[in-house]
Length: 235
Image 1 (spheres, rainbow, N blue to C red):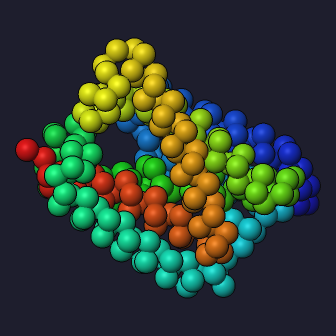
Image 2 (cartoon, rainbow, N blue to C red):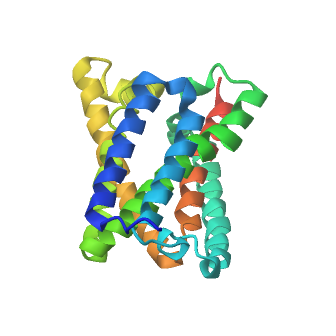
């Protein structure tokens, strides 16, 4: 006997609860297990959407939209690469790529970050969660615009814990806001606001392309190519 459909509101609450638990696991309780945690959490979130009557199309991975999503993905990666190249060549913007997290990495380390840690540990879960499952469920309850805003606010709040040490990791931000507790709070608030705004852009890409591949590609390019340029420019 098939399970009865999960009500949309129940699925939404369960999805948010899963993300709260995962955020604590990844940033406090078991950060070394992040790759496994994100894969399992992504599967659980997709299962919740399907249990609530969802589909691959609603998730943004419908077969009929994959080709268009792939075209968007290639274009977006090219744009980010071009912008980063220009910024890396200009002295006034070059320092923005300085990142303490790349200092201890060698070639294999940066390859792992770009090909595994970023796409699996960051992009997979965040895009499935915020531009896939949450956006789909919220759209059933609110208008498309409101759903995108709410999803993006949650995306911003998701970055509270990961951004606590951002001022230390990014010397430019540390020197700008200071290395005090107040400075760290300001950097964290700025990161939450920035990622919420970025979430709105990613939601727009999801809608405009009809595919989750577009925001996934932009998300990967911004993070992974940022690591790569920072690694190549380190002194």
